[in-house]
Image (cartoon, rainbow, N blue to C red; front, side, top):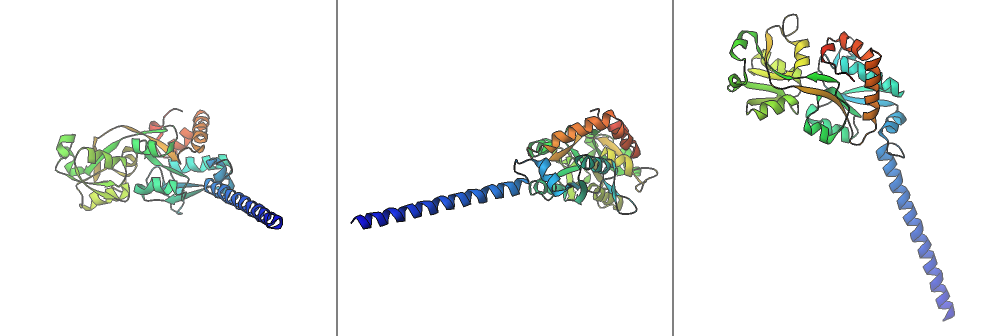
Length: 277
């Protein structure tokens, strides 16, 4: 009987040790997964970006903020500032064109590290992202053919028009709130093409883009802007809780004070829109 009891005690001890070992392995696996998901042991987005050596920036083709030069390289006020910020972190910058309507999903899925593309600080954006301080003023404005501009000088005159607007944009929010008829398109540049082609009566785009792309001396000389629908501010969005947002705020402050921010803005003609940091 004593031998039986001793044998049972031995088995129980072995099982106990095995269970403890399994728990430790499971905990270790969980810790490793958490570290892998966050990119670093302390969950810092900054360390995640530094560890992989790149800051991946989600953008669309949006002159004068993000667009390609004749060599196919991304330039623009936002693109240049993003490259300078990445350099300050000691990493490379990588630009990825995204579907603007999926920007939050792209960010949370870590296919990009931030959204830096003349992004309006809407309630949806600020509740879903860790956002930087505002750095540029903007507005949503109506674009129509020059020969029809006199007919559309106030909001009430817009009710019979069909609009093209970028899906998921502040422009879409504005036309939707006004109950106007619209078709969502992939990018603001597509909205301009719709109006130029006559497939839409009008578009709503950012005023900074309109200043660069619409009117005399641009590729859309036959289009003009009329009604302003709102006033707004641009910010950069990171994953919720990201420590990169505060790092960018410090970078903005330093670059504004040393004049490099305004110098970059002057290159693209947006200096009047820059907000003091």
